[in-house]
Length: 425
Image 1 (cartoon, rainbow, N blue to C red):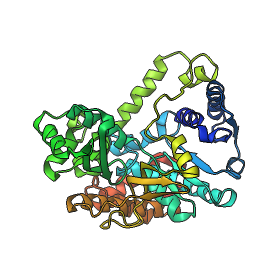
Image 2: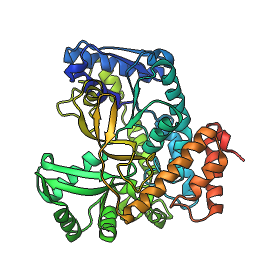
Image 3: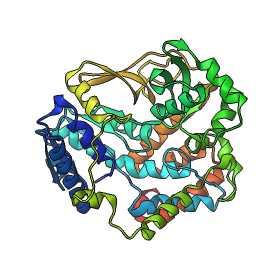
Image 4: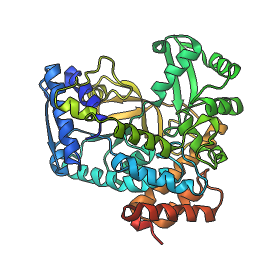
């Protein structure tokens, strides 16, 4: 039922090697799932492929004998209301989250609620499709992938478009074609470090740094510019993601006065809801399902490129792609088990990280802290451990002291009601 799946179905449909495959949709929301099934049927009809598509409310039915499970799950609730509950709640303590899906109190809340769902899916996969691969798009990305890898035998590969998106920014700054740039980047999802950048094989990173630092700060890249100036490396993810990994997020104490021109997440959600209320037309997905609007047929693949990923995993040849997978020695000064975003060779049955060497200490310091926070979050979610959840939150850069961590956590637990009842005192 996720709107993201229109592009997934489209990218599978335009991948010749996958012609004749069966796509099975599963969702707990029958109405959304049926809309997506109808959209998918129109995509298949328009592309004239031999794909088939069906939907089911039974997870065992969906998984039975599958080769690849593609997940895009949200625990936000209708209109992202439950996500807004978190960001509204923590704002009472002067914690103004600009995204809230990866770090900070809101990111922790999302992790504690989504990890048990993914672990259950992975354990069902062990039973019904033990050789399958899970391709994940849900946040908190690194936490979800680590949970699946740690608590099941199912390999999880995570996909995010931030590194690919950053190339458009770099190309504009450098006044070159994006297709001629190649980036080397690594780090925890949503706060990835640009280690190197080449243009037609020539090192152009020094010129990128010079140009960024010699011009006024740009919207959505102002905090990243400050980080570059202090630490000599550019962080990828966009300011609204990146700033939440640092104590700077606490500079704002009111929702309307956030540094770097950023916006409070609750205001973003509220504005989206208002737009829907003002628009009396049926939702776009309803129009597409009814045949009143064209469905999406990709002429240019998205950064995630799901059809190409499945083709590479199933048949080869290997494809270099930025993914979120266990480190496995690619960065020796980070833990092997930590899920990081980096280039990997995606090929038959596996994604193998490309060795990068040690991170500079000014970057390893921030990355390692996040990976161990992920470990606490994953264990807290699986064990339903209040103590470990408090440990994870108490070390978060947005939290000022241990007592604040307890008060903020209890406020979130109370606000979320039955969804977090296991973490009550």
